[in-house]
Image (cartoon, rainbow, N blue to C red; front, side, top):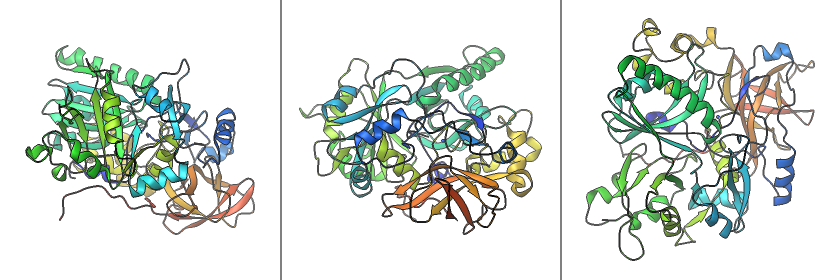
Length: 494
């Protein structure tokens, strides 16, 4: 498996996450406002005050076979907010000045949308031009030292040893034993023993506790100098997404036209470079920016990590540079981020994935490296957390999995929202066979109702017709391939 292939079918982050638990109903960095389009800010406020999650939707018997993530409140593109005072990203004041509607998300005050574009307009702008998202709420990590690779290959199932320098892969942090997904993450190998990775804001406490325990255990065996772990609190993170993203960014790269490394046409999906931007006065930025060709929308684009040490205004300067041509780049918020990621078939943590499901159950089995699938090495040295559970599932899914994550198209009318129960189409008893975890009318498909969720093993094949209960009315849905919108990641030409 190539170093960048894992990112093709999923991701990021890349957005943030929420506290989740195993429940009768039930994964990454975008917004899923309940998941619905709001006709007005008033409707958005009403939804925020009246969370829909937490209601029982499946019987105990059904819950025994259909166990998926549950969210404790309004969903955003990546997860729920921890309790306590809301934090602000480095770009908070800029959002307010630009007319953003700010909402609580993953413990932060984050922009839902902006006054210049509606949710649907912002979504379409991203698909046609380029949008800039603030994702600074996400947690940026650096892990280095002689034990960094070994530690990360224990807590994730990916073949990180096959990554070349400055290349990335989507992966999952896994629970020992169960193989449940603690969080999804994008991991970048910066050098032989140095890694940069990003996790979800809504899972911050859980992730840090998990990583601390794993790192401390490793150090106890291999010595305190074996690992150095840093949380990069001084960095902002923005995502420039859309077909015009490269055209907007290229002229700003310092050295364009003279330095081959400044040429973004040779920076492919799943790879990164440290580059400077040119400021309006002709000087370069005080720090290089880590520019990764990746994203959470299915479009070509970049995530840009911005250091602020000694340069607190740098995130604002970079953002204003990227917004200098409003006919090309506009700001976008959580609402567009959620509908974009759903069309791209990407999971939102706490909704589509959680510790209640393993990668194979969540249709993420491809994150497991092909060279890590030997059943004989499921335990012992070199294995990864949960291998004894996950590897048999990959080897014999029909015998070991009780449910699968799939996509659905739902007939015209009210969309199937999170928590909607799935039943056999002709079953008058309406015995649950699955549940919707994300759903909304697709802006790119003219309002066609799309959804993803979990369904019983055997009912997961493309084209299978099922029923979904929407407002207690039976609606026809069809199991569909994901993504609904073809990904446009920038790759080398064959």
